[in-house]
Length: 373
Image (cartoon, rainbow, N blue to C red; front, side):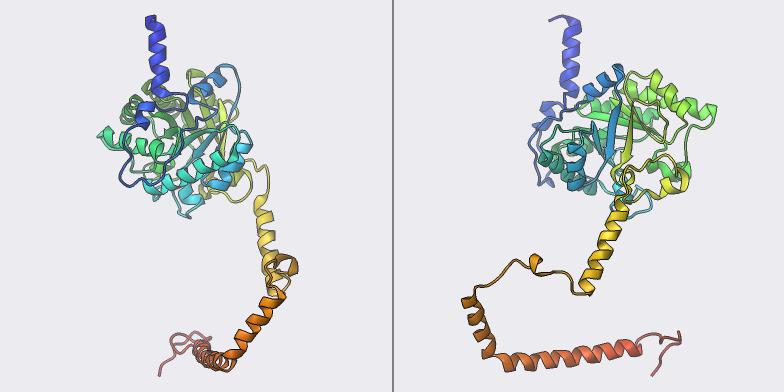
């Protein structure tokens, strides 16, 4: 085997066609892990994304967080599915992505993994977002251990990190050398909201734009297989994309990136990120208005319940035979008086409690003044 072929072979083994060395998968799982996955390789790999860029084919990526969403994404043939830490905002209701924990992220990743397996379709590349506080340490072994958890416990093919500093590139290099594929992320980096002063577009001055290019180059040199460019001017994203061999995935970064990513809930019109609404109201195209249909459905359900229309007989399929009905009625007759007595006692207690509430004996009356004995 020639030296060049041997080097290529080693690189293929290191990042793998699903982004992870088989040797890594054989290492013991952490004591807290209680879920395992069959290593069914993704139909899309870190290498195939680079090939797509080289041949001029655009890459599609969707951010999703749970089983049903993952099923839909897989069946749509999306290239890459990112389990984003934006789950903190979209699924858990936090104002930023910072509060979500590593263990919470792993639960979302596990759910997504089961979804793509259930879909039975060509499976997208699965990327787990490493949350704030799981990889920033000077000791890069911490980041590597946590990256292994995404692969071994949650079935991810790769992980994503935010930032492109020298220190971050060192971490990326450590994780890649450890056998786990890494996707980078520059531009608006939501985990750094405390530093950048809010959810703001990045790279809007020449100096800052050049710094973003340097960050992206640094991540490529460290071994990242792709880079997310978030909320940067289109011309800046174009310059970065043309300067890199690896693909770029844009979100609010114009049309010239190697691919595009949107959040499942956003593109379907279910709901949107507060920071996108406030600062970038136009970059997310809605391909459906599922949120309106959901609201209409919930309103109709409430109306049918209140009017006694649901459930009708067609939605009450479980019946007893006539013989069992008679036997049941006979059982009810045996203690009918006792049940009636208990019913009256319970009704009296609940009536008294209801009167206390109406009189506001423990708080304010309807006029706002305090009730005092």
